[in-house]
Image (cartoon, helix red, strand yellow):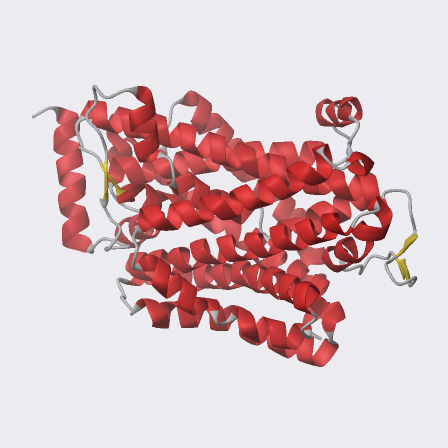
Length: 449
């Protein structure tokens, strides 16, 4: 037995001894072909986990940010979307590497390798982040239901709670079926924006101007993956590990590149439709003015039809918004299960786990919308993004610490490129969090009052 195989065996043994696996029904449930199989056959086996991850980068919270950026700065912040996507690819590649090599997700690594007193606060922080993420999904789906069927937003939020039944049904079909459904939803989003930007003649962008904005940045102008990769049943020999890392890297890069194009498309659409205007005339003749508190998602729907000369654009927008909320909520449930089982080794029935996750999102939404009305959607989306931003360093630094360690990763510790770019990414994001912390706290306080 080679040194690396001994290290892998010890890691797996300690994993079994210290805690059971997360997502037990899905763990090692997808067979992987032998090393000598063709590239495409192996790729089909590994593709999937990053698709589930990518939806978190195109949820309704991101939509609100993209729409505001395009409306206010045209293509000026397109480079920010590109840099953010590149950072996301780097971190997700590293996260997948941790899961492949150690056989543990990030939550389990923190539980096993950090002092026991850190488990509860780490778990609480992760649950807050998952609740905040789910809040954005609830609002996106609720706004779509409200716009499609004219159901009051308050009741639309309550209706979104019913998707717990959808999630329970999906988990019984296995990880491959979940990946396929999310792929269809992501495909729906992509097709909708492809039609709006490249088929409808009124919204075809200036590609040269967009390219200039990407390569000339301007500054005058805001961990579940390590578990999902373990759904693949690959061997722990050196060749199998190398192959798994390679194909998970391809999977992450391809899926998050799609997420970049979706976010760029949303920003571009807002730039084409809203930039340079202080108000627009919506269907029915009412004049909608723009301000710092503008609910861009709702205004985008109201104004697309008269501005583009077709109601098709508005319908496509709402369908894409609903698909975004539903696909993101699927991964939110899996994330909640991973962190609870990983940090605390607690196992709950799927319906109860889903109920807890959704309650964290639905209750604040119902309270705020009930007190402040439909105009509070933008505030709630802002609050969700603030919480997620503040939580991110608590995931990035443990991830980089573990994957940079030869004791934890053996010969598979991060190479120079991922080591340098990973730490630079973490430092930049954390610095931006600290710089924006006073404004974030002020925004959160204003929303809660």
